[in-house]
Length: 249
Image (cartoon, helix red, strand yellow):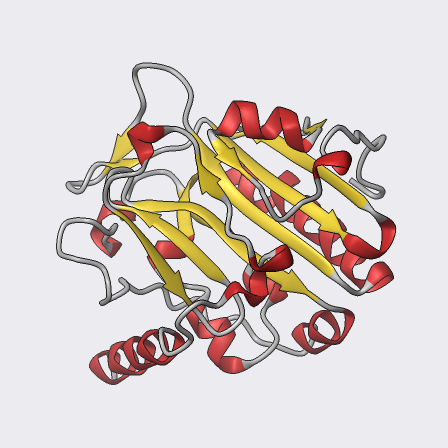
């Protein structure tokens, strides 16, 4: 049974790669761009059915995960059942991706970047549990504050329909924690960049990867400076906006 399930998930991943560009998940079909040159080696774009990931063979996890949320998709996602079947993406070269064993007894959750709660069909739900879409996340952070932030972003998509979201880890400091034999990097912070074209609204949310109830709303320019990632699909004239917060968080 387990072998059959693994093969099925691998088939889902292979099917997802059939979309050669998958730029539909980013505004104006423009991918985020790495400006931190130390992070550019061993990067690989992975396309899934309703999100895309830039994976790093250095950190052994995603550098960002992009999704385009619509009202219809979020409505459909309400009826989906989580599979909770994490798997190793077979498209990654050996040694570049995290393994299931890396997370075992690590003390960290496997934290989704593009959330399972946003997935609107069975294929997308299964694919979201690829280890290429997760990072080691503080358990309380993942299950409490981060979950509420994900819910708030879904509410934005329900209200304004057309919403682009890029989620990823940040790594600050000289001595970074790792887990497992693969030495998967543990993020020091997590971010979401949110862009709502209809509202001409763009902002970032940043959270420390610890047990906390505190989050920060930053401008996109501030996120670009802190993360080493540029977001060319978001208009420059919107990158200094800083809304008051996330309603309901």
